[in-house]
Length: 328
Ligand code: 8YV
Image (cartoon, rainbow, N blue to C red; front, side):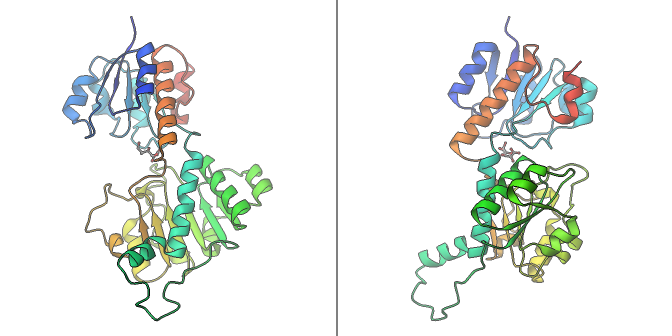
């Protein structure tokens, strides 16, 4: 008998076919998110679950007594309550590697957009303003090349950003991380730096940290106060890593020049969020990994993790905090 699994969001047909070969599955394939009461019913008898968001906590797990593996189609796994999963012996997997280059591309999209004011000037042209204004400096921005980039959180994606920065834009790269990255230091001339020094020296500050209890609001008033008045702040990680109210104040008080944001403390971002009123802030709807190829690869990777987990193998991408469960 094939193991029972539930897929709680639409996935590409090929990925569904792969799961069908190994599992007895049901799928929520509607565009709107699955209502919690339906999810609770669907997970009551399954061994494996594919998810995209939604807390996997004690309460959720109590509705899924047979669950062995939860496979999220994302690299971030802040939706996992690690302690609750460990207690219930449920493996959690994520999708590292396959999105690194795509997210690094978007970080540079935000850097360029904020520095050269691309979305603002795109609107300006489309609104018919070109030729009306006489101020020849009106549309000036700031350079990206040969400036200093500070990366807080130098994981796999951070290293891809560093490569683009050093080899493409000839930027100086500073980074802060739990561990030193000899390869990035050697190949891209990246220099390890304490956070305060990195903030004070960088023209562009990119935060690339996972969201955990320790990183919640790790960038706040003090950190914005240390940045250069000309600095541009980029967040493509998780909104809650940043104290958004402090960011708004820093922008209003011109403590920094601008920001490029793919993520927000509350998503979708509220229309009354003051960040949406600021021309010097580029806002995107959490699209770091959102290309056809990468989202396909992420779904396939999540499917492979799921199938491995429900067929008695060790899934390739068990999250580091739960690896010890997989070794039992
Ligand atoms: C996800 C992301 O695809 O991977 C992550 O951690 O933030 C995105 O790439 C998104 O959260 C939807 O699952």
